[in-house]
Image (cartoon, rainbow, N blue to C red; front, side, top):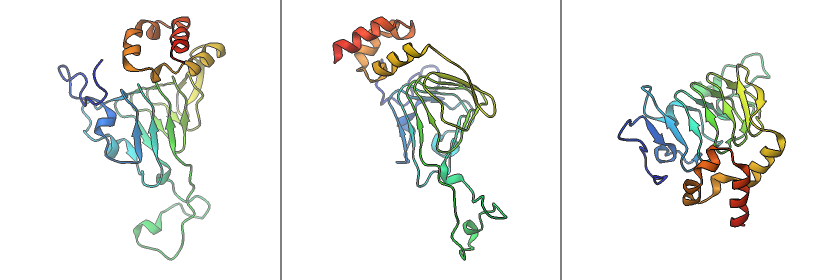
Amino acid sequence: MLSPDTKYPIEKITDQVVFLKNDITNPNIIVGDYTYYNYGDNGTSFEKENVLLIFACQLIIGKFCQIANGTRFIMSDANHQMDGFSTFPFFVFGIDSYTPNLPRKGDTYIGNDVWFGDHATILPGITIGDGCIIGANATVAKDIPPYSIVVGNPGKVIRRRFDDETIAKLLDIEWWNFDIKTITDNVQAIVGADIEKLMQIKESLR
């Protein structure tokens, strides 16, 4: 397995796929090892084009996430005041005679091994659990529990990927936190859904 510090992990084929943490300069965006983004033909700056208005909040993305082209994270700093007669941000344009009452929804948290389809949109202050699949063009407006499949606008959970017992075991195992040699030596168990093998590995590492 390549080092997570490699920027272009499949450079021989394309330079449009990056291990994302190596392409981030904004300290408010924190990305785990091996999470990748596919730029496609639409730009070369994830933090400028795909993370909208991040100043006082954070975007935290776990390890081994797969982020397809056009996925956008709208941050809490992008909100407008909604309790007055106008939502227009007058203060942005030099009118400072009032203090805006902006809704603050906090940081956005993305778990580990989350797959985002093309042009998914994540609204401010959302938490998406480990192992989720977010469908193409889905708009996620509320927290999503681990190992859920989400589609549509507004995004809805259509089903959980596994039964509750298996999900509980996966959340205890946290295979993404194994050292990379253990992961690569046991890829077949991970992609082949061999929960007993993964439980044995976890127990051996305790």
